[in-house]
Length: 287
Image (cartoon, rainbow, N blue to C red; front, side):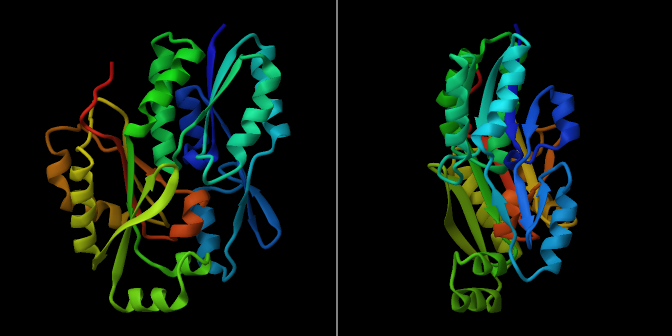
């Protein structure tokens, strides 16, 4: 009996990367003007942003149903395996609740972990689960460790525009206009499973500096654990600028900086030009 690691496409793990890791990613559904796409399957991250930039109407994402979860879990259990499903934060989507409902049918063979995160924060827990799986840990032990460590994951993002927060009704048009006029760059974080505004900076350089300061205030990066950088949009120009500006955080500590493209779940709200960093805070080390 082996342990299968499963997550959803809100983690922004591509199908190719999932194959490398030996995991399964259940796609969420992204809807543009009544046309449905399977996130990461029939719609790549790049195609998503091409469509997002061209449309005036924001797309929406449909949560995964208990039936869809049940199909996946049944296949795993029927093969004689057990599974750990790492879900998008229950405070951001009802999908986690649907997974719990579906898992109840399989008598403890499927364990659901609420990541209390999204995007690359959720992805870090998946990468950590893969490490634990490869060390031979059981599904129950992996889930217990993930739940113990999920509070150490920090996700911080610098947005390039307020336009999509305005379109989504997260801020008023007046605030958005004033922010764009003053070149305000908001910094957001995931705290207690929700996306919150933690700071604002004027201009991208000040935004990068603020992002670095928040990383340091979070306890720094534990480079023995998974970490990730990400960008939204059609190119990573702004992310590469951030990497140059924040060289002191990584120089001599990381041989390479893993980079991920942000997809539709978060991309709908932050728009193109966002950059993000996810890490386990530095005070604790992997056992």
